[in-house]
Length: 345
Ligand code: UD1
Image (cartoon, rainbow, N blue to C red):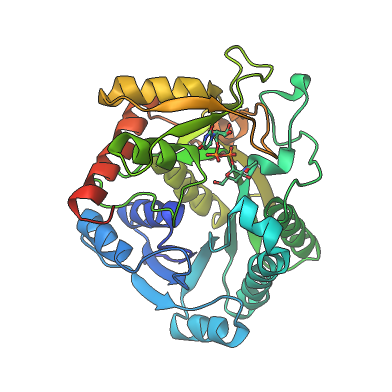
């Protein structure tokens, strides 16, 4: 029988791409999303790609009763992928309690309900932000690198949620979990039917690059050119969102499988560090479109350089990032052009 996966935050950026990959791998998907940072039209995009419209429930997972009603309505959920969370670093500094309440209460509600409704596994969206700035000898960073004090309430919610899951599993709760620590997800589905749609002025690099290239933004600022890196700009591990989505499918099969550990942690990245300047250059090369940019002062709270050691995911999950950076940047551009065509921006 087909397995059913609850994807919370499934109309969001990573959630929508993961829904597509799950459906294509033969799972049924139920999406729960409060649409606080996404659009219901994303379901059309998913349906265009897979031919199947996922079940959708507009609910806020902070609402315990509504969440329980979801499990009553869909009594055969096998596993959960929990994306639903607030994710803007700056906003979290201004509204810490909103971040703590939303990101933590939602997870607790899901965890409490899992045993009651026989849901065996949960994949949690964590972030490389838990490593802070790793020391030189800890780069590329492995899952064993020390967790460092979070630089923002957002980052702290990721750490706290990891600990909550860990404590719950260790208490003997009849659930298993895989925690995925993402590096920097970028790009869009190759069909351009789904992609990243930030609200307002984008904070993340790639949407800012594509919006500048298309003329929605005047100029990209590259934050800092005096870092201790070869070209002076920050280094990140940019992972194609479709590759990242596929990692969730592997993780789901593993967490629901027999004889796997009750809790596991995986870095999900490419294993390669790329500088901000290199990203902009690669975008120009991939698309033939010039980006108007200049150097600007460092952005507060930015980490100088981080990229992942992804051996554990390669070997244990049997997953590997496949996409080439230029193709990924071309997919982001195709998506931006589609948004223009559709009159979104
Ligand atoms: C940020 C968060 C991270 C979070 C992730 C979610 C911080 C410190 N980290 O990652 O915790 O999980 O977003 O999306 O905020 N850049 C520019 N100009 C721009 C935008 C970005 O130069 O207009 C540079 C940044 O300085 C950075 C790189 O591009 O070096 C990537 O930035 P971004 O896309 O915001 O991701 P992170 O900061 O790595």
